[in-house]
Image (cartoon, rainbow, N blue to C red):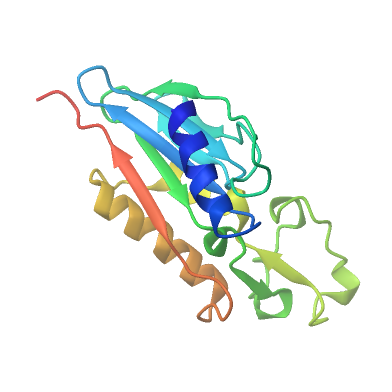
Length: 181
């Protein structure tokens, strides 16, 4: 994994200095393990019987420094577990707080922002779907297939935002380990 990251970084550097966050993983189907490197990408989420775990950055984004080193990490997917990676567009899906219906605003559950109830209709107050939104939709998902799990997260982000994104894509990728028959 480290050699792969190094080779990718060198290839990116040939085209000039740029930030290239990436989540790179290799799944061993027999063991149910994923060896991964998270080069400054939004954390992936691992859902299993114990809950949802964030798989945070293991190094800097690719393309910034010629000799950046990445650390590799590993996780185990038990039967029925799912690993989900989302684009920054999912995390940054937002809407103005004044679009919330009465009672929908939970100031403690909007990426830690403490919204002022006095200015609830101010268009400058924006709530993001965030990692908490992804985590919550993942916890509540009843989907068993990777496709359905991706659609669940995408649907939750789109319902939250109310409008189509104008500056970011909405991408979700899932790996689901099937339960033993």
